Length: 476
Ligand SMILES: [Zn+2]
Image 1 (cartoon, rainbow, N blue to C red):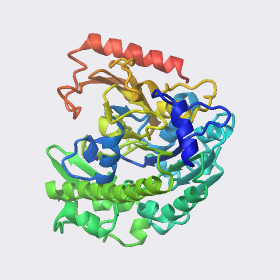
Image 2: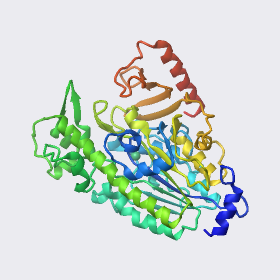
Image 3: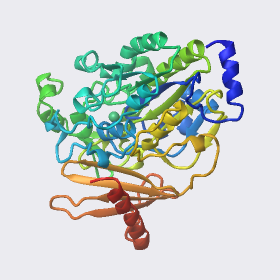
Image 4: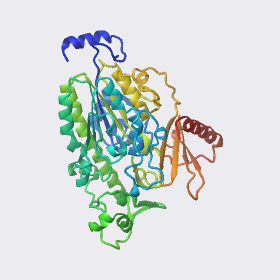
């Protein structure tokens, strides 16, 4: 961008405000990094004890960090469907209800062609759009390529070689090339790195600082879904049945990764910590690429690119008796739905200063917010709300805004509502089991270990009412 145009823009935007569409007006580039399987509390920017994310921390220090951002679900399909359309998953029907993941059906469900996606809305406003994905559940089979000039599905290049963990390394060169070609903008690009998704396999030099010289039973284990999901808490201890894991994974058995009749293994703290170390190492590996992207944007599009970092959902790392996400039974605890949300917005587009926003927000707010920042008109029917007011430091939003999440699968529906410090999780009914409600006080019990539903019937009733009202308003 020329100096003259920059000066003109600055004079048009004397007071901090949003860039508006209009003749000659320019628009920001938008780089959205949706890190798969990224729980907020493992980023040093969110107070984690390990310095996992130095580059993201730097963006957070100069931008806006949303302390309390929530995904609308606990796995990829409903979450991506939601934040790429600005609607709740239930209004889109984007669940894989009643199905076990082992017998998923590629054709069901699919994002409706009549839905307007974020890239479609931006295209209409003159944006070039690109998406780089690695997941099965945000692929073209599910309708997620809608609105992208360039949609790149790196599964075939990456995951089929069982190197899905290295997706960022795989697609970054092509993504940078595309941004370089479109740097005069405006462009919108979404990157969905998969490094934090099992099997958490970053290069060894990222693991060793966190794992030390661990040489336990998990050191040579492929962290597949059957393996990690067979780790269970029994009373106070943890154990791992390799037989169960291998029985569930024909491919593993065929690969003879484990001998048959391997006795159940008791896992100790060091084993469990090793899993977390590999997750954290994957996060640091992702952070390295984010540093490269931020440096590229600063050098090649100075002042012109908004960088947004988030996660589509979190990951359980032993928090509630198990590992992974979207497991049986489905869960909506904090580690699965509290995700990072950081926006680094050059002052020319919106003078946010560095700030931490404490008010709770939802990922369904991303689309209206991005359209606002881009000066693009929102399609009708959006269920999220623009966070532009919060970004400008206006304290209009109430701290008690309720945030909602939902997941369906394994024959059960689970919904949650969090209002202030209170969180209610509604499960069921499930075949053979009645529905139940759990209630947690996140202020005194952030780990959701003490269910207070029995002691607080009035609060349960009130939150159930809010949850049902939200459910009725937003779909089936
Ligand atoms: Zn995901």
